[in-house]
Image (tube, rainbow, N blue to C red; front, side, top):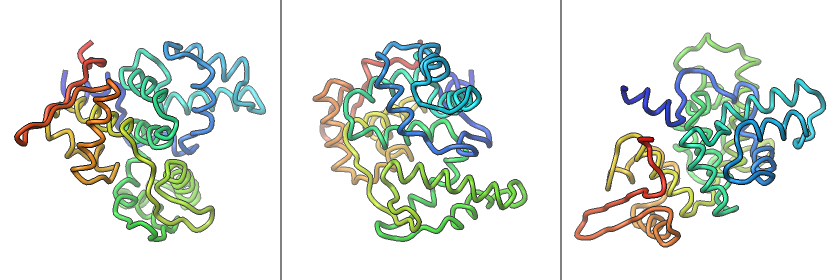
Length: 252
């Protein structure tokens, strides 16, 4: 099995298309759904809540089915997917971490959302972001791929997700802001690096960890906090960093 095949098995998604062609990251819907079920809930359980019980209060059968399909695209919504299993456990540990945690998972699974990542990362706190900048980012590699109307819709969805996660603020005029980050987000970032085959210091040098925008000292402190909460083991001595994930296997 090559590296990309392994990552797909773990829950990563590749390609060109993603749920942000239709929706934002659906934080409110996700929160409602996860709050209603235990950690070991199956995809069928979540599907029943959305489509049969209409837990998310959608107006039609078709809207319910589309909503669930987008949630599956973004998050997996199944304990059979290793990354969702880890995500689901971490979700319960900190309400403060949930908006950014949802974005972290959405970035793993939505190539369209990932196209906007460098643009957002490059903005300074307080710097404005026009929707047209996101549109330009989405069309940079393939200028004729999307129609102007599609680009506008996609950019609005993408901006909505970055806003929900705390990276942007404002309704009509978006400006860069700083999201709330804690040990839960750091744990998931480290685990994503682990899935990609990295270890030790390398786990702190990935794009996943850079998303948190913390300097190295704070990153180590977050890892230490995670170890105190029992979600990872973390050791640092004489410049050597060791991080292990005894609760989660990627070789099952």
